[in-house]
Image (cartoon, rainbow, N blue to C red; front, top):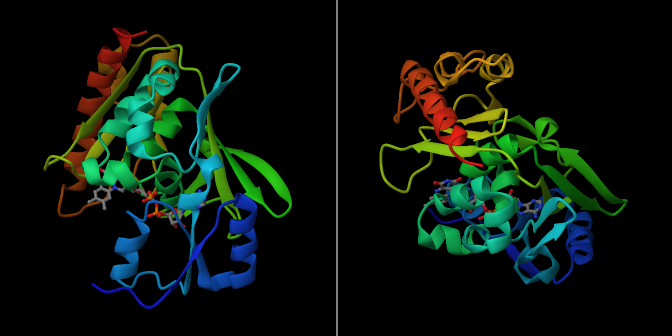
Amino acid sequence: MIPAPFRHVRVDTVEAAIAALIEHGDEAKLLAGGHSLLPIMKLRLATPGVLVDLGGVPSLSTIRMDGEELVIGAGTRHRDVHQSPIVTSAAPLLAYASSLVGDPQVRNRGTIGGSIVHADPAADLPCAMLALDARFVLQSSTGLRSIGVDEFFLGFWTTAMDVNEVMVEIRIPRQETGWSYQKFTTRSQDWATVAVAVAGGRISLASMAETPVRAGAAEAELAQGKGPVAAGALADAGTRPPEDLRASSDYRRNLAQVLTERALVEAATRR
Ligand SMILES: Cc1cc2nc3c(=O)[nH]c(=O)nc-3n(C[C@H](O)[C@H](O)[C@H](O)COP(=O)(O)OP(=O)(O)OC[C@H]3O[C@@H](n4cnc5c(N)ncnc54)[C@H](O)[C@@H]3O)c2cc1C
């Protein structure tokens, strides 16, 4: 469990991080909280020769409103997202989901951007992003571009980002509708066996496919005025839940239905 040798490069601006990515090419990897990347390096599933450390870039850890949009710097730690009054007011689903990520050590180091870019289908925040209809702002040597969450997650640990891009901001429309986040784990402080996020008419699922996914059939049922029972019964339609040590595929399908119904009932009681 010892990673291959690597160089540690500290930067204090996003521009310096991009320059380091370009200079070191395939060798380089960005480092945020290290709570996903370092375990992978210890397993030698990744062997970057250069880690470009974003921890010293102050502009990446800010939380503010821009009109009706919540803007969170990609380097903001889970704990700060959870405890922010701005996030609690504008996107309570995200504040709550952030409080369920791992344990206090993980929440004190891990970042929202690191979690989204890592794109683990069992993770809490990618699932929350889908329900919240987030947009991600990416910076490269050619400038900024923004990409919607529905186009971002392409496969297991795979996103639509280019290798020399840095995620700088997460933008979320102010949440005006009822919400719920239901996470089922077999141990406390674990990744979700299945999780369901509901914000208004959007329903998303964790651990039900190679990426976080929308529960499209359940959303359509809701849009036709059907209730939580009818919508929940369709939550797993079109999904490909994995079979692993935590749960069988059929068990996950059942969980998705039960948790979606529960989430819709709860969301109906909240603003
Ligand atoms: C014991 C343990 C328990 C955990 N439990 C949970 C859990 O219950 N739920 C959950 O959702 N997660 C869990 N996690 C994962 C945790 O949330 C991580 O913090 C998160 O997945 C990665 O964030 P990070 O800041 O640590 O990123 P890092 O590990 O530093 O980076 C992850 C990836 O993102 C890239 N990256 C990071 N920042 C940027 C950026 N700004 N722009 C472009 N690329 C970037 C890196 O190059 C790397 O590929 C757990 C982790 C541990 C170790």
